[in-house]
Length: 262
Image 1 (cartoon, one colour):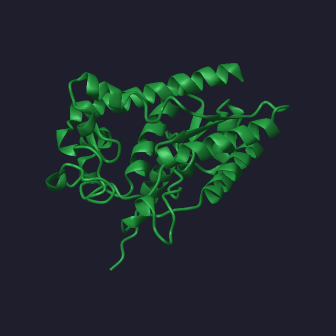
Image 2 (cartoon, one colour):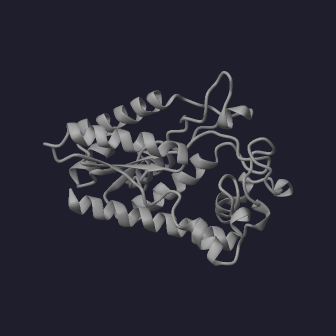
């Protein structure tokens, strides 16, 4: 048997929904008219986060970069103001397909050639320029993304030199000061590691432990072993809180500085 809501209830619900402000910095959660109005109101900075879908050892999910960079990009946008965040680019260079190299040696990793990645990134930036954004910030959460981001920014800035639009490849965010800070706290460099080690593990312990398999946080045995470089078992949520804050603050400072220079 189906029940209908009273007309007055439907009317009240509709009114409440219509009265709600968007309340989000994420582009994909907005309508096109809301983006249009945000641009008209001065929201002319957009962050394009690049992540990756790659192996992160037996203790951490494949979408590590995507989850972390979306969270951090959102915080950066909120602190800056007048900034939106594009959908995360989850398909990035991760190695060759056949024969497999890099992270492609591990099931679940998804790779794209650098040229393909650059073309998608370039046309995302071209799309935002067309819509009226003036500062386009490339926020890369993976080492393999950095060279392509720099190349795209250089190429487009050269082409757009006579316009007010600039593409900013952010260099202060990744890897950021987190690894060096962990060593300052007394951790050994080999435990801090360079992939799926303490840095990202600590970030998830603070942000979302459900993305970790806490019973599998074993010492890394490298690319020929479990895929981990470092000792994730040394991580703490307190470390993660501090590392996330340092990366977010670094990106806020750099984007703010680059916006002023434009």
